[in-house]
Amino acid sequence: MRLDRFLTNLPAYNRQQVRLLLVQRRVRVDGVVTADPLHEVREFSRVAVDEHVLQAGRAARYLMLHKPAGCVSATRDPAHPTVLDLLPAELRDELHIAGRLDYNTTGLMLLTNDGQWSRRLTQPRTKLAKIYRVHTEDEIGAHYVEKFLQGFYFAFEDLTTQPAQLDILGPHEARLAIVEGRYHQVKRMFGHFQNKVIALHRERMGPIELDAGLLPGQYRDLRPDEIAAI
Ligand code: URA
Figure: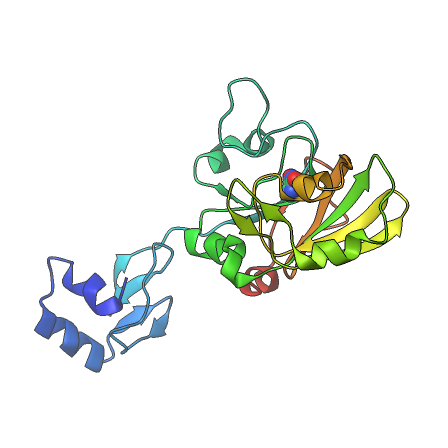
């Protein structure tokens, strides 16, 4: 919300008083004097007029988790353990998943309570590359590469997938970069060749790489540079 609207929404100030507070440089957002009426105020922002705190600001949380196989990327599931079960109870209620993975897919999963940040991460127009390591049942042919670049028609969504880069690492192993996150996307792409994906591991989402020090099921807070990179 704009700073001037945030202030006029409070019973204490009318529009004229808000304009005055701003030009008198009495308003601080996150400790910095702010005279711009359009400055963005979020639920995480601390807003003060002089020494009077109007909003303390909720703590923003950003975690990376090494998702193990055999758990669902959902906040609740009646039958299976969920990724949120791996976190302490006080975090479970406030975090959401930024980019789900299938039940048996492993690797990088990001969780946050910051909806703007997770939207930037997952919306297709941001075109952030998600990097997967793929193991398949049958051999991966050299001709796959061109098809991944051209795109696959997904009838259900009535769309053709964005160009994807496939690097063949071995007869049954490849690294794949995709910029979308369609339902079962990687499996459906390989399904085009009737080649079953037998293991799938997400190594990276854009600039954020799974920490090699995290064992499956472990998590850590993101560093400030990782948060700012999105
Ligand atoms: N594509 C899939 O098919 N599964 C995942 O978990 C992620 C991408």
